[in-house]
Amino acid sequence: MIMERILEVETIEQVVNIFGSIDQNIKILENHYDVQVVHRGTQLKITGGEEGTEKAHRALLGLIAVTARGEQISEQTIRYVMSLVDDGEDDKLNFIGKDCVAITAKGKPIKPKTLGQRTYIEAIRESVITFGIGPAGTGKTYLAVAMAVTALKNKDIDRIIITRPAVEAGEKLGFLPGDLQNKVDPYLRPLHDALYDMLGVETYQKYVEKGVIEVAPLAYMRGRTLDDSYIVLDEAQNTTPEQMKMFLTRIGFGSRAIVTGDITQIDLPEGKKSGLKEVMRILKGIKGITFCTLTEKDVVRHPLVQAIVKAYERDEQKKK
Image (cartoon, rainbow, N blue to C red; front, side, top):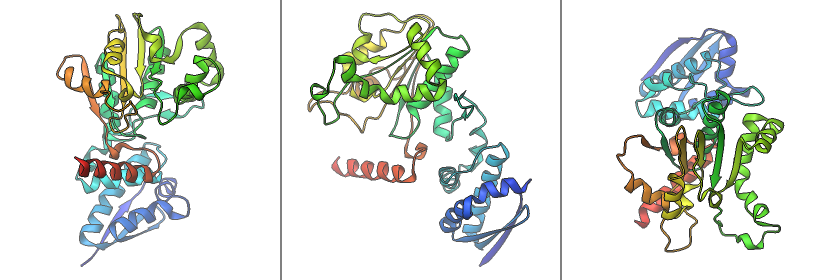
């Protein structure tokens, strides 16, 4: 049975945003629900089977709400909205994109793009220690750095310390040229890049020179107590249980810690336990500590990244 649904959009600019360049956005939706969507001015008409038309209608209502907030519609936005509709969770779309976490050096607002990211941001605000656990591309580190920079700008803290373990992912540090700092810099590069994006290169370098921002390998944290700081531990799946304990006991008064990692990407030598896996068991249920799990649905990179994450998860399940 062929159905028709009519929708009204406020402005023609919003229609253009939803349809995308050369209608590439709307084609994704049409193919997914096996419907046809056409517009006449600001009016949208959906034609197709009963179920597909109804779901396409709900997805378009979600996209209209997103574009009405001034958000740019991308392929990732379309696919995420459709996934919420397919799971019957499209009523939660209003919770996404309203909350601006930070502004980049180029004036671009940083907002949670998925329900998982929104939950993660709320956990960081409410907890002394937040664990962000999930696959690559879910924004764990980027959002953690954004929250740290915002707290620094608001003068809620005095400094930011960002660290990660220097563990080889199939490569050996000893073969890299230079001293220890030169050897570990490639491991810290993603953290530098996120800070450049938030602050701009000049501001970032000034903060580093003054000691307001520190990006260093985890080994540099030993023996310190960090007060009034935002401390971010990245790639925590590659810590040993001893390193994780050492890091968590650095936290002083007025400080917050964010620990990010992906337990499916452990690069530790065979037989060594992951500190992140252990801490999930040991600290479960302690007040002031929140474990926030992100999934492949929260991936905000190329859609192929979602497919890759799912494929690896299926393979892991088969092995188990």
